[in-house]
Image (spheres, rainbow, N blue to C red):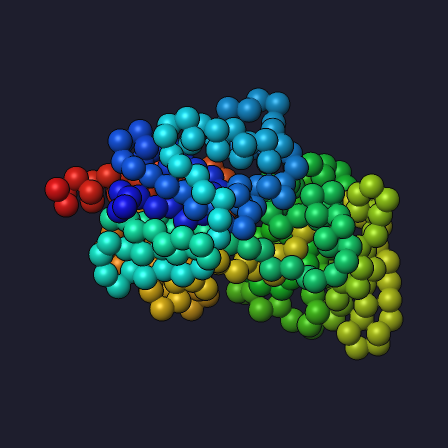
Length: 305
C-alpha cells in the first residue's frame, strides 16, 4: 500500500503535520521514533505554549497533541525508522519489521542537545538542569545560575538569563571563547555575568533539585564549588539526521537544508522543526513548521493528480 504521507518523528512538528495532513483528507502515517513526543517529554513545566494559561507539563502537552492527531485520522506507529530510500518513487521508509511506501515524506526527527556527560546532569534533568534558557529562564528569578559553553549560543543564553537571575556564571574549559566578538562583548560587559575560565563541570549536586556545581580547573586540577539553583548546558545540538546523510542535502552541522519553503533537496520530501531549524528551537515554532510542511505537501499532492 502506498500512503499519501509518512511523517517521521512525533514531536510538535510531526503531530501538527499529522493533524493538517489528515484534515486535508490524506492517508497519513506517523512513525514516532524512539521518544514519541520529542524533547518535550523531558520537560516539566511549559509556560510559553499558547492556550495554557496556567502552564502545562511537557509530557501532558504531547499526549494532548497525540490524541488530537489520532482523532483527525492519523495512524501513529510507535516504531523506529531504520532506513529510507528517497532515490525513487514511491518513497521508501523502513522499520526493523515493516517496509512502508509513500508519495510524500515529512522529516520531523528533531535535534538532541549535546550533553556534558556527567551523572548529575542526568539526575537533575528538568530539576535545575536545562538546555533552553528561553524555555526555563523565567523559573529562576533572583537566583544564581551557571551556563556551560563558549560559543554564540552560550553567550546568548547567559545574556538572556541575566533578565531573571541575580548572577550568571559562565563555565568554559578554555581561556578564550569561540563566540563572535560582538556576542562576547555583550556577555563580558554585563555586570551580572562572571566567567570561570579553564574550568569544567565535574559534578552537579543537590537534594531534590540542583543546589551546587563542582568545578575542576583544567590547569591546576583544583576543585571549587558554587552554590546555585540551575545549570544551563549550551554546548550545541545534534540534529537527528544520520538516517538521511546519503539521501538529503545537509549543512556542515548536519541540519537539513530546505530548498523552497519546507521542500528538501528531494522531490516529495519535506521537513519541519528542529531538524532544520537551529535558530528558534521552540515547541511553538516546530508546530508552525509542521503546519507549513503539511500545506506544502497538500499543494504538492494536488499538483501530482
